[in-house]
Length: 219
Image 1 (cartoon, one colour):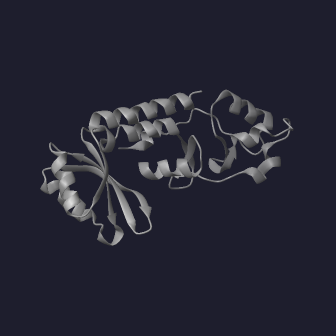
Image 2: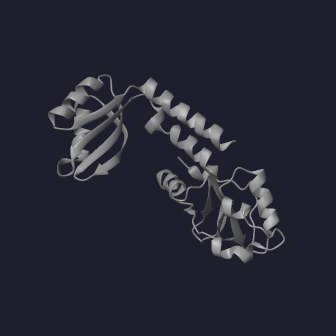
């Protein structure tokens, strides 16, 4: 999966010499969380949309408010999950991207990246979602894989979805003709099966949530 195919250049960038009123117009025209400052093809930082909208002197330049600039970006080599994490950390709906020489190359749009994730084999392939818990000292990826595969299943993907005190919670996507045997084996190995979701109901819920988020972003 090459998420670089989703790098966009549709919305223009600004420099510190750009007028505040130009930046305010862009924020009114597009549902964006930030505007980007790019000079000589270098990313200089990002202004929050709400900060732009509250600037009172429309005819002054953005340089007058340089103290409000934040600096964040995605490296062009960053994998999908790292990009999703950056979106969450910076509470943004578009994320600037720089190349290996630190040049600005465009941006990712949150709705595009969520679509890529929803359509990934981890969520899109037919299967079941299992959430299991285990004491951290007894938790083992190799054991989890063995439990699934010894019962004729295949792991489509997994991640640690929660960690509290000495408990680890793992979410798995599993392809299997008999999920019951897998859950029973997890219990025999002292894993607590927190929940299981059959493919149709779970995916429909995810898709409906994605559709709702898409509509929200387009408002």
